[in-house]
Every structure is written in C-alpha cells, then in structure tokens.
Image (tube, rainbow, N blue to C red; front, side, top):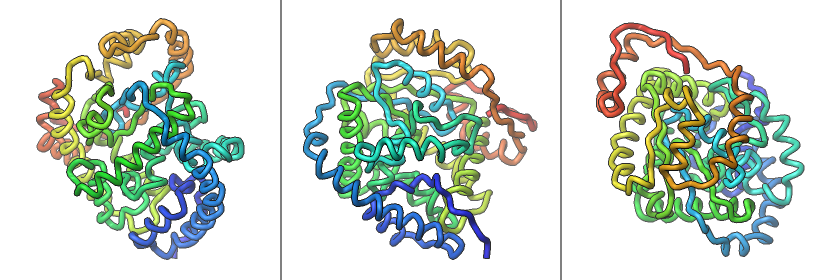
Length: 377
C-alpha cells in the first residue's frame, strides 16, 4: 500500500465539520488516504467549536449586511489569465475580495484570524502547483473554495473525490441553473452567505471575484446580482486545454482522497467542459446590456496591461483608475521575472481540440494548427 505524507495545506482542511461529514459519507476513501481523512476530521472537529461560536456571534450582522454595489466578476475558463487579472485589479483599494484566510479558513476567519493567518503564511508556500505564482495573504483566492467548506455543491470537490471519473458529478454543481430547484436554493443560500460575510468583513466595499466555474453560471449570477459587471478574459484554446489538464493532474495529486481517473479521462473531461462552458457562456454573456460586460484577449492584455485596464474601467463605468494606477504599476513591476510553463502540443490532443472547439476558434479569431508546437502556459 502506498504511504502518503499528511497534507497540511489541503484545500478542505478548513471545511465545516458537518459539511465534511457529508462529503466523506457521500464519497469512498481509498485505504492509503484514510490517515489524511482522519487527520482532517480531527482538525474540522476542533475548528468546529470556534466556528460555531463565530457563527452565533456574527450571524445576525452578516444576515443584515446590504450589498450596496453588486460584484464585479472576472470570468473565463481555468488558465485563461483570470488569476493574473484579479491579482492586478485587486491592487485597487476600492475593491474587496476573498483572501486565503477568508477562503480556505472561511468558517473561522474572524475569531481565529491572527492564528490562521500565521499558519497559512507558512503552509501556503509553494501550494499553487499549476504555475509559478505564489499564494500570499495579500492576494485573492477563488470564492468557490470558501463555498466548498460549507456546501457539497462545489466543483472543487471533484479534485478531492474524483472516484475514478465518477467525481465528474461535481461538474454539474457549476451548472447550477440546470439543477433541480432544491439544489438551486441550497446553492443560492450558501453563495449569498459567503458573499455577505466577506462584504461585512470588507466594510461594504464592492467585491471583485474570480472563480472559473462562474463562467458556467453567468446568467444565474446576473439574476442574483442584477448590477453585476463581467470581465470575460479569453486565451488560445490549445494553451488553455494543456494548462488546465496539467493543473487538474497536479491538484488531484495533492488533494485526491480516492481513486484518480486515467490521464486520458481527465484530458477528455477538460475538452468536454471547455465546450460546454463556452456554448453556454456565449448565450448568457451577450444577453446582457453591452455596458455590463467586456471581452478581453489575454495575449493582448499581457502586451499592455495598463491600457487594457483603463479600457475595462471606462467600458464598465468603474471609477478610480487614476488613483489605482500606482498600485497597478507596483504589482506589474513585481511580476517582471515571472516565467510561464511550457508544454508540447501532441498531435492527438491537437486533433481533439480542433474537432470539438472550432466554434471557439471562430468566435475569437484564433487559428487552428496542424503540427506539434510548444506553448507557453
């Protein structure tokens, strides 16, 4: 039996105890992962006591919190540049966002904040396996990881419980408006709570949010938050598919608690998800008023981030660009030495992408390729 070391930076380590119990009841755990599950169960139980106290103290103030400005959403498939764009835009002090403590440790992010911040500062080093970016406490994370701690309806659970491929059931949680009414109500309740809690902690500031699976539910988010704005960043599909495949492989290696699917299964699942996301997103994104969304090409954005940011602010009617510009420049200077991963595009994968994603190439004007190339991701 394979011996595994305990993962002290597991993405569900801060899961609320009752939610954790539901997850491990609903999913098998392989023998080599039982030690990790027992460890996480103990941590979840111990943290559950202050978490319940935090909920008792702050439930009413959070419930009464008003969303005065609906969120700004950065949408786009995994690995399209959503992280870079959010990291950059959250340098603007007018925005609030989910930092690592408010995300992974969502249930204890008030009363235990100093303790958890110190722990995460150490544990999160090198914890981002898919690229060369670092998690730091002053950079944002995806709100889905907060929702994953209080709900069984989060696509992030697919990485923890892939179950040889049966874990794709968690993909359906991203397409929430296609689910039964009961599940939609459960999702809305959990999502509303995490948004209100962070708005409360951010003293009412407008939230700038990024979770790639939000691209699956643009219409639902727009109905929940009618004043929301959307920044859709897109990228070369060859790069996106290869980099997403690499990300899922590495993240499952870190977080998986049962049987991993085959690499071919993951590759096909990535392409299936890509196609499904954008066939839906194109309909929902372009159904809203033009002033509520903007399309941004990743490759063009990287050439001149400041000018593209200015365009985003002007098009969406966001104020404060000039005030935020020095903060943007400081962050861009810090990223000058960033190196992208490089992957070789195999013929078989290229053919699958060409067969399935032609509509995306046509929509954004990318050229299909015919031979093996190396791609920076």
